[in-house]
Amino acid sequence: MPGISLGEFIAAAERNMRSSIIPPGYFQKQTYLQISDVFTATFGRKVWDALNNQTRFWNALRKVEWGTTVGWRNRTDRGVGRSRPVVETGATISNLPTVDVSAYERISSNPRIVASTFGVTVLGQLVSGLEGGMGDNLAVEQEAAARDHIKELNQEILLKGWSAATTAGASGTGVGFDPEGFIRRGDGFRGTTLATSRFFRTGAGTGTWVWRDAGDATPTGSFTDDELLFITSRAGFTSIDDIVEEDGRTVAGLAATSLGPDVYNQTTRTAAAWNAGAVILDNDGTGRNLSINLVDNALRTPRVNGASPDLFITGWDQYDRLTQILQAQQRYSGFEEFVVKVGDEQTLPGTHAGFQIASYRGVPILPDTDAPTSFRTNTAPVTIGSKFYCLDSQYLEIAIAAPTQYIDNRDFFQASGFFLRGLFYTAGELRCFRFNAQAKIEDLNI
Image (cartoon, rainbow, N blue to C red; front, top):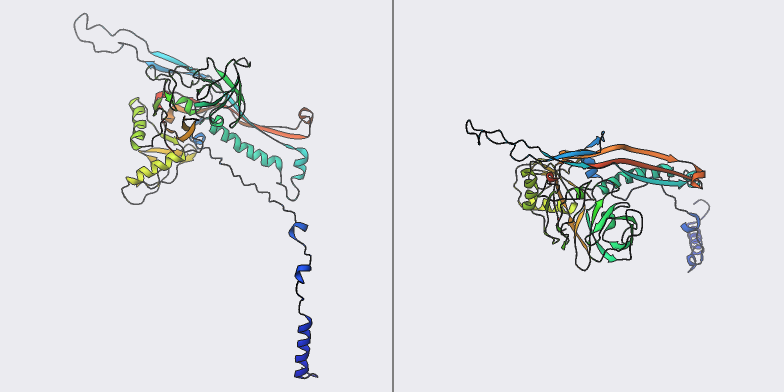
């Protein structure tokens, strides 16, 4: 450098380096501003729903207007001797057939109302648009309630028709198995030792059921441990498991004698009479694996009855098991991918070779997370695999008396506070015009 020798420059550099040496422990003696001192977490306005909102069975069934009546009829008998050959001569054998009439069974069911409510505070709504808020609490809850409403409808038409008592209680109380998968508030039920219908009132999960008789009075008696419970009426939509049933089965290893879930105004469900009972392939509460033979039987028996099954409904466990069975029997026939459309739903992509199945023997398969499960009893009821339904959907429909509607309320005086409230409601019913066209396989392992 001009004006300084190389030696002087090196000496100056060494002095600067020695003066910049950091003393031992220097950093440990300092205090630093940390995240927790200055930062408050804020959250984006997007809400990611972690719940399963699929409603496949609801979407698959056709929706129709309610119409002008609440009932329909099934012809259940052709009339004895009304049809026969007539020969040319002979007084006895040439007479015309005896005049007789058909038998008709009257079936009825009123519309059922299902409602879903939500609400937010006015103050919460005011601050929801600020940084860190969800943007519009009312709109977010409204969207969530809309999804929950359809999910509830799907769950109701897939409720199981049977349960069992797990703990006896005082009059009008007790603990039942899987109440959320079996019954809703206002549904009528009875047990194999209870004399009359009772009504579920409060309680959820594994908590105590509190129930009343038809007059809303505390009933005398309660169910006993391991007693079979079954549906006698629904406050909400009738379940497919109520429909596809018959009396006198052995359920979960416990004999139900002549009892079984009622449906609509029908309290007798015997397959030997006018076929108010459906086709049931059960195993008296003992689990067994799904097999091709069982599925073929579920298809064949309704066909013998004159039906044409066109829809399988089951859970993911049985869907996977059927896939594995068919894959083991696979024959390669080139690559081909297809899906089957059912109502507003479509099946998973499948190939005729058997890797993924969209249908079996031309009948589409829809796995639904809400599909009811069988159970068995030991020291306590235990859930086993999903039930497998083989349905003829031409005899099934969702009749809508009032399409889903939205109502909100901002009457602070009525609410006794600054609250914004809303609800969705739907009125309708799941109708079945022919019971022996429907089949189910029970008592399957997971």
